[in-house]
Length: 305
Length: 270
Image (cartoon, rainbow over all chains, first blue to last red; front, side, top):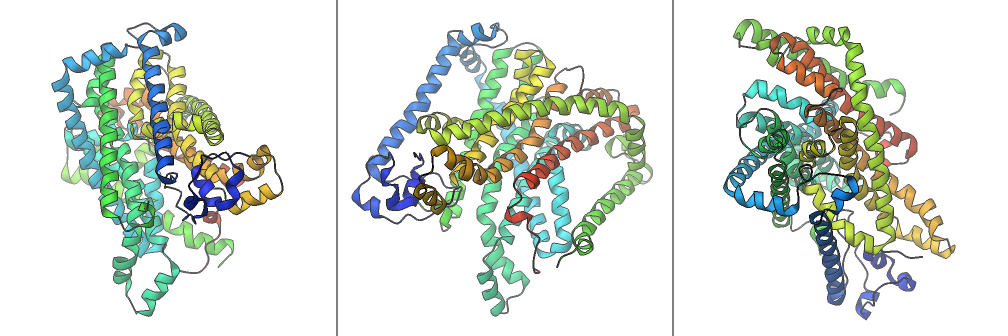
């Protein structure tokens, strides 16, 4: 039997001895592992282990990525899938295009990111308010949650033209699209966080004769914070998608506009540059939210090392 | 607190009131825009509900056919992506090397605006059916893989020890313990991916396909205000496709993994 997660090994304590694990130090073998929530990544035992996992965990994917790019550059994929260079441009061509249009690409990235951030802030705020209302008046509030969840299943593509009719083709329509796409994740997650409170804590609040507002202020809202950040992380990606898809149709600026236009006039390298920048911007945005989470909910068990 | 009638009164009534209220507000606002405020393009901005419904009814054949084309392709891609994602999750849980190789990319792909790839894929493939299937599959792949892996890992350690004490073979551990434990995670991933797969398919259609709900949506949008009701009908069909996809997955989940806490009847108040 071979388990491969380090976390499980630490869960199983001493019964995991027969597993093919790298040598643990004596202290770790007997250490009682603290179970972590599912969101936590696998815990790492000790500095030697850390080094090993780190080196293998970084080196291997990097090597794979380099190999992939190499095969792409030397037209291996073109041969296999019978593609022409104008269909799938080479990495070097994409890099050259990025260098040549750097200032334009940078300003467009900023524009798209602005749309995404503003829309996400508005959408998340509304979503949080919906969750508050749904928790405060459960009988009628749950219906609004269902409606918001239904809105979440509506394809962004269908929303884009409507928002365009309502808010014109400026930045406003994209902010509205992003707002609509980020509302649901926040509403549902924040509601979960406000509902999933420790019943003992609630009993304590009741024994103090705390009213509804106090229960919300000291217990529910605080308990919902980790869930709120989970939603923000989901929304960081969703908002970039919303902004870019919104720009596909009625825009004269931004990465999405440039992307769809480049494809239409068969400037594939430029299109790919947009994808690369959108990916980088998306990852940065996500990492910023993650950083904020570390700062704001240091006290929460899920943040423990 | 049990019994059908109370359940209906407790859960469904508010929802129906919400939906009905929303439609009333919609109809009222539509009338306001048209006759009181007299905004330009009032019916395009918010058409009468009854007009949209009658258009839906009138052209239901066409809408159904095109919707089915979209849904079918999205569904095929979704299935392929789901199977591939689940297989990758199993491989990742079996082999440390594969996990190290793919996990960072799986996480990174979660942060990347995947739908932005739709035009690129269409540009490479140039075939609407294939590119619809590819984009839906690609969108489905990573959420399913990540959530399934989390599920496979979420096995109760004492249950694992029990399997050990029975000297269970690895495949028995997987079959009897890990797969059932992974089902909630798997369905979580599927539920995230299903509406996205539909969105991806529609997006590809907007890039210049011949069939599908996205095509008539765009066409009626460009014809201007005379086709407003038809355009709104396509939007509603698109929304319904997304909702139905989510609802289908939820239904299957109830049948396959009915033991989850959220399916239990709610007891008590609060």
